[in-house]
Length: 111
Image 1: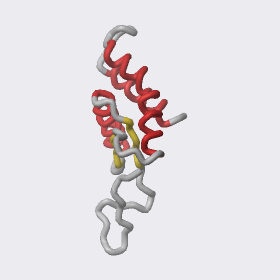
Image 2: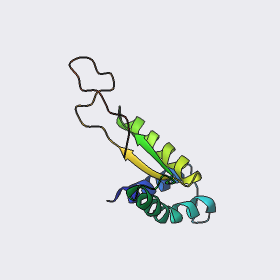
Image 3: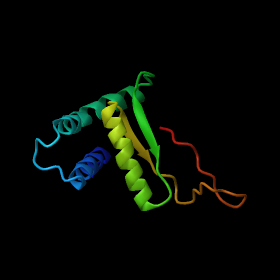
């Protein structure tokens, strides 16, 4: 599954959790979700071309599955409202945010 498809699925699932019924339960959400793939592709192209006007949000996801899921849904909702491309960075398995001398420190989120 493509990342954009997964994010759309997460947003729809979040809306269903709150018991919204029918296709017209929340038209702004439906429209934002419909517009997102085109927005994401457009902003990604800007990033690839080095255009500094690209608008995006990077989530650096770590520490606990539930925390990552809630963080992704919240960040994606923020990205939808602000018309930002949304990217998720999962650190390597060796990454430890509480790194000491023997652990591997996490790098900051970047593209």
